[in-house]
Length: 414
Image (cartoon, rainbow, N blue to C red; front, side, top):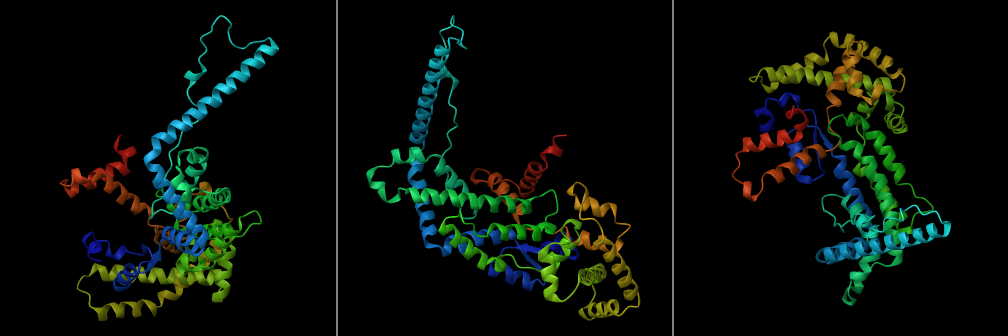
């Protein structure tokens, strides 16, 4: 927490978004800060460990594809030449057929006075894509690897020598790769919603969670190995995407997601209705926030005085009045239509802040939590590109300025 104290935000630390590493979880526990698991890391482990890791045939196929990509890495130029020659030949055949049809109809489209029609100069119809490998820390890079291999399937066999027979992909394995690509694309499109930087994502967790569960349902047209992979992932889904009171409260603060089935099931298990649940969450967060602000304002406050502050707030006569006010707000909020103008939930709460003073404080506190650590990891990636071996002597302040300009270029250039 020294970093938080240095920037004077110790009273504003609401939740730490981390991976599931034991060392990180231990650090959060020692710092006495609430923790939320990054859903990006959760999906990564769900796909690689619980999916590919538990289906041996798919794991072997993944290893074979990696070996094949490594083998083709040194033959990239040859692969491009073969692909270009193939496309050029198809183009010339197409032009030849077209000219024959024109002659038969005696209605040529081309000017007969001009014999310099060079169709070969038109270039290729296909922009050859290279074979891409996967990255251990990015599960969706497997999707790019599969797609690049499938796209270059016709030319890969030509490049492989007889000694590479062991890494040749069979027709059945090509079919499996196509099914896997289709499945992984559904997961990728769903989780991209949680990796946004310019809008809140914490309120989207439960709807994305529901979509991911739907993606894991087995279909008759799926390959048997893909069905087995889905079963393995579904068995570990609750472990990778745990439910919590904070996540449910964030969904209730968004009128679009107040009636999700997963919310109703969660509250049924707890034996509480939506109003009582939201009232309790609001009171707990507001009391905690008030005590923290008062204690942080006085750096000399002792541990005993902190406990007395908490007891005083809990048993204050004003707490009853506040509870009634919060209950009225919750009833009103849960009765609103299930729409948010332009999908801007922050703009919605900005407009109704005066109508819902207590709930707007809870919304301001919860909706600022990111669903994943992807935005911060993007900053790390930019920093890695800025601070290289030849730039190792850059002053830290200069690095910060370059990263800031990179992330805010549209504003800086004005």
